[in-house]
Image 1 (tube, one colour):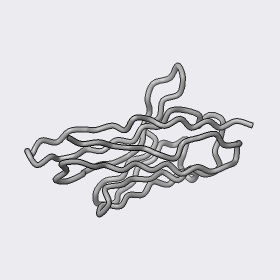
Image 2 (cartoon, one colour):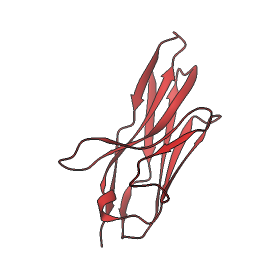
Image 3 (spheres, rainbow, N blue to C red):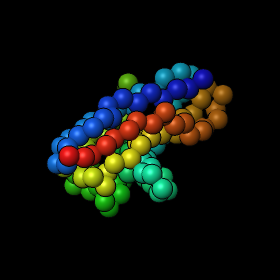
Length: 120
């Protein structure tokens, strides 16, 4: 079994910062893409940031210049540093990882979600 566990959400004032972390564990042969989605109430889930195993990153236009994604391949972790947070960043954030198991199948796994609330 594979598990993704997130940490780091919470309440922050506008202009503040938060760091989200996600750790993958279990029977992992290799991890390809890792990243973060978010879903605000009444809205569709949207991609926030992605990071390929080779280190190529991709960001939603709404977070460029404010969020930074990073990963540690040795530890199977991905993090999202969020600066200059805005109320519109309020959402549940989900990490994901495309993982190849020892049975040679590749599937997308999801974290449990962590709430980020930006409010004064």
